[in-house]
Image 1 (cartoon, rainbow, N blue to C red):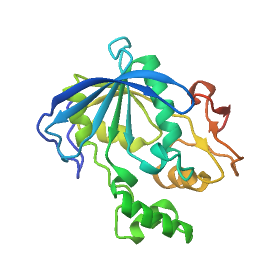
Image 2: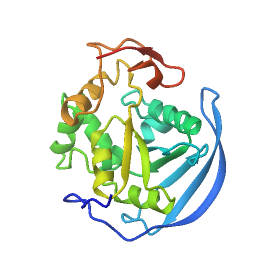
Image 3: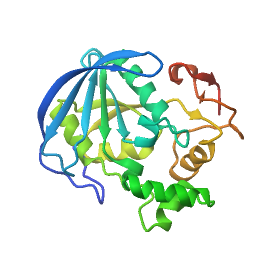
Image 4: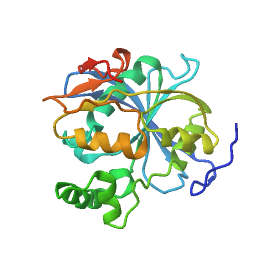
Length: 239
């Protein structure tokens, strides 16, 4: 179970729980749930990541876990340039129903930061895709390291989990860091006219498990198996 860490993702010492407090969550569509918000001491990157424990993680054979990278524009302001806000909303309900944890990681713009993300947006408006825009700025296509996420899971007593993601790198990094990923559960895919090019880039450049139509229609559409569709989204079979 303790696989050797891959290059660039080194093990770090243990983290410990700092604070645990219950927060009632309410989303714009009216969905409400209570979460235990957990903060930590000793995270490898020194960032203020937080875990949201939802439902009863001990009720299932393995807790359902999502690593969700912070996206101020999508999560808070509802930007349609990405699918982050709808994925966050979907993940909270699915994890609450099953029992598990959402790790909210302070990795804006796939690790490049908010201002750099805005600069990358400007380059995307000039024709570059989301990955080429990052490299044009001298930044990595994806600079995220999930060492702190593995520390958080260990501090919460989670050594084996089902991972909610379309991104194979998340499962690969966790396994390299000694976390047992039992199954990968696909998220819904929320396509709009504003983000379909971004989603195509994720599927083509980093092998996200995303199936997309040639052109997204107006509004949010979830593409995938019906049981994977997000709350309130339209689901169609794809692939």
